Amino acid sequence: MLIDYSEILKTSGFSNQELSNRLGISIAKVELIENKQFYPNESLAQKIIQFSKQKVNLTPPVVADDFQFGQPIKLRRVIFSIIFIIFVSLLFTGFGYQPFWVFLLVLLIGLFVTLPSCFNDYWLINRDGLKINAFSSSSTTKLTQLLHIIPLTQRTISYQDIDHINVIYRTRPRTGPFDINPDILQLICTLKNNQELSINLNVSLEKNLLTLIRVFTYQGVDVYDQQRVLLALTKKENLFQKFNPKFS
Image (cartoon, rainbow, N blue to C red; front, side, top):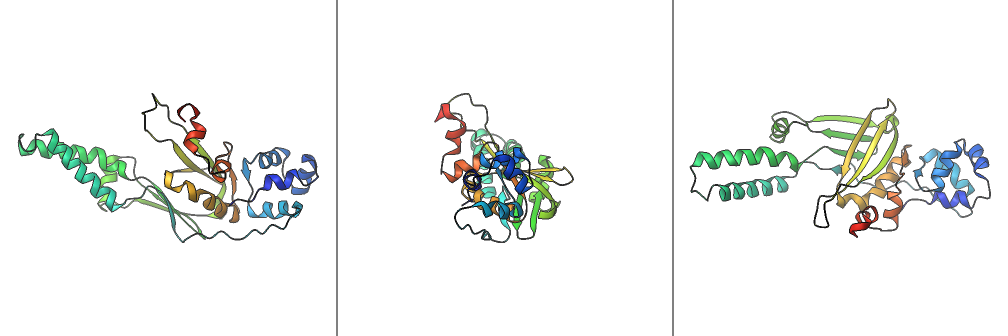
């Protein structure tokens, strides 16, 4: 659970100008905290809780080493996809009615088109920082990375190199209520050299996002949440219904 810094500031008895002076931040950032659109790093959080009328403990977040988020290669998903592609290939070729080379051609096309979509970049988070594992944007290269012919790109980033994190929820245009294309919940990591790295979170990680955000802030990273996604998760709201009210 994230600490409600907004309530602490609102009940502090100080004006936003006074809070700005005492905390050493801009009035705009004070307002973002009050609107629950900004979650401060550990250093700033320690200053804020001094205004709390109740005792607040900033306990270290508990997270497993190399906690994984993104869409890594999973053997079960790959096997299921291959079986599905074989079945579809047999269906298209009449279950042996067409020559074998036609079946083989359809199968190879299916593997080439489908398998690369089964996995994407993923991050591993631990007490030292982020380990980013990135696949090629080329389907051919991704297949060779799946077979370990070509290694995927790996990069380690320490928390000290991260300037801030943005939480973004992107809705997809829909043609009707039966359009099941999922929306995108995304973390955008901006480094101190202004480079941006992004990762898409699947739905199963929504419940772990609050813990991940706590890890980032505890490690000294500011988190921006202009859409108040984290507030919605704290209230256990359904993100799809929140951002797609006409389909709820």
